[in-house]
Length: 223
Image 1: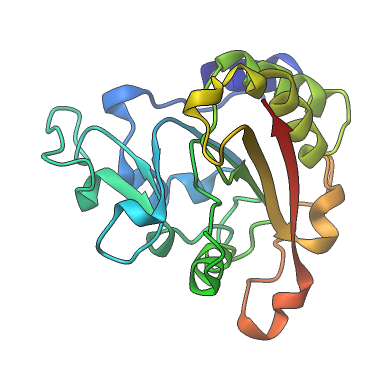
Image 2: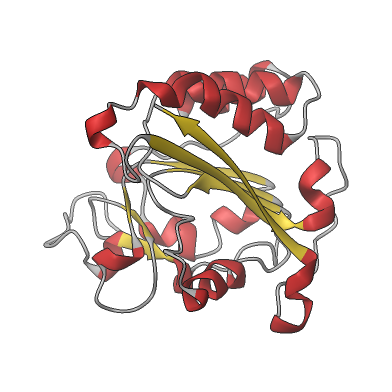
């Protein structure tokens, strides 16, 4: 995330920003007020699919400390080391664009209740960029992503372009689904054309009655 941050600053998209790394990055940063206080937020790290947890809260962003700089998790699925779908509500404050550089965060497995859990995170958020598969972490992808945004591309297409360039590095044997990386963007339909100069007025919060106003855009990268 450091290179994404530096690219945002270097392309005059942000004058400053905050980067929490390693044991300074906590589950509560995503589930509390910190992340939602940022207009543009990104997470990069380990992700667990919805099937990894027994608590039914959905896929999660994994942290190796338990909301502490020194207390390490006792199990991979420990609650306070994982920010899961049911614990995240973004957009009620400042966040408009979220990017999740982790495996499987937007993977619903074809289960409608999982899809609803994903959409319930949208409480004013315009777009969420992420993956519906195993993905490959390369910090240079953040630099390209920021450069495309800085050049005036839409945020969605900037994310797709950077992923198309770097995700083919994923070894075929590590892929799931086999042989591909599924890059996914979800959001309020009219916000698919957002660039960094777009309005930062909150999108409507997701409800069951306005579900048809939200869209999913996929790009499948063949390995």
